[in-house]
Image (cartoon, rainbow, N blue to C red; front, side, top):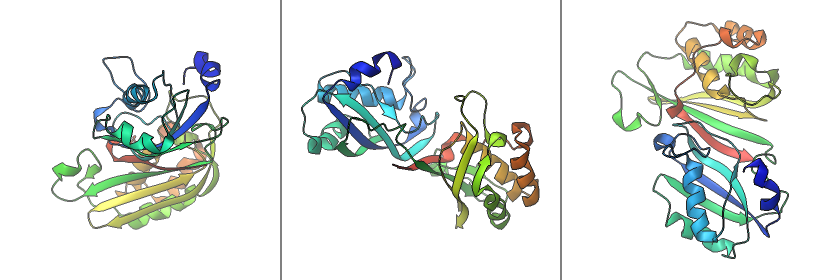
Length: 257
């Protein structure tokens, strides 16, 4: 929500938390944009205002980039609207486009913040492998024709576990904050032609997952050895890591509170 409106918003009587899923392919990220550019936040706030009868300003657990998807985005907002919380999901979904869905709604304590109350997050990233691209996955996975060594990528991923300075995988342009994060799980698995990365951490830096995947793919292609991947992590230098993986393979999977 806008800083200048925060006090006025928090003075309202209710704090509503929503669990939202979306296909980010048609939007310029989650964050509110200036028209004619549209972010998912623009759409959600517009429809929620119709339901609750007052201005809505959302706070979100993560500001996903253009083309990035979410299974488990969490948002909250303050309102004086009187609609019962058990009617919110059906009411707002009747107005939203098909690529944005509210899955749950609940009334929470006034101190809850989707952004600041989050304890950890899980992101997944999907790659499609094969000689022939799948047109139905082009917006939902990164297509790589050359075979990837999943074992090598999994071996390299293990060095991410624990608390580290992740500056090597931090893109410029993000908020100024400590680059130190704790990685609880970093897994690479394969099911048929699909490869999925799963990262569970205390938090993530700007483009961190996409930069991790881009560098791990270099390991899978044999361009970088697993022990070299560890060196990249320890150098704290973004120039040593691989290219940023495309947005369409990334999903905000779950937020823990």
